[in-house]
Length: 328
Ligand SMILES: [Zn+2]
Image (cartoon, rainbow, N blue to C red; front, side, top):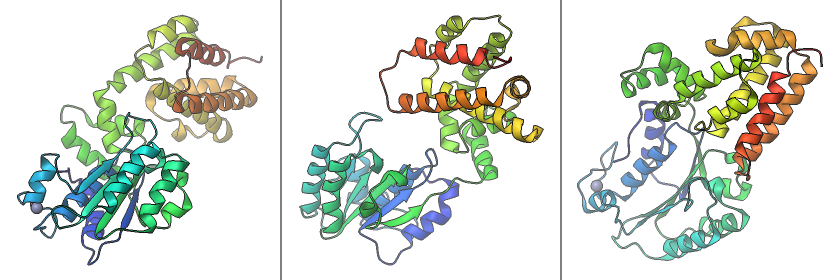
């Protein structure tokens, strides 16, 4: 049974409470808030032979088959490898599933996540299934970046925005999910996860607070010339490159912001406040703008899984970062 998150209660009522179901839904919103769980819960309830007012029954033939992962009338389409594209061949297999008749005599339900990982050919192949819905088939599309979808795909779906939960609700939920952490630690994790509570739990599991402490300490030593870019780049071997680029991008924005506003409330997490203030005072705005452009461009490459030499890239970053303070 898919997990039900407290911040989805309203969404769930809207979706599950519909008198008649659409042929396709697009659930979209930020990563790490449980859109997939919401879609799975809806899938179970649409397939259930005795659905209750708020959930699938969990006991009928359909529910048992779904639990066993062998339901003949449901289909999950996702990239074969994490973060890779959904291929056109995969969509063709899906299309032939959609035209079959239901084996249990009820609905068929298709879940696709993330929809934006389809290239144009795959998306066009899917479009046919959206244009000519077959019988009682419901498509559940999950997207983290709906702006990347073809307008023709979006327009054929009932769009359901799944917003970030409020900070208070996320913190309340995190207190139960991470009972061994302190209030401050949970607030910090939620900030690092850009407000997504499930992403915060993942970050905790990856040891992100320890990694961040290591990086912050390294940046301070770099600026005091106690450690070289090469030493640091090698010492950060276990830290995901994207996370590092996220932090440095964030820091460059905070420096610029402080240069423009001198607002001490906008200095970000406590661990870097003094460094950000120092760099804002000691560096020219041009330098910060330059390094920010560079960071954003490199971050795109990291996101695009470009074949990067990790140590060289980090060295290049740290050499530039070390030269921020000063006139030249
Ligand atoms: Zn059931």
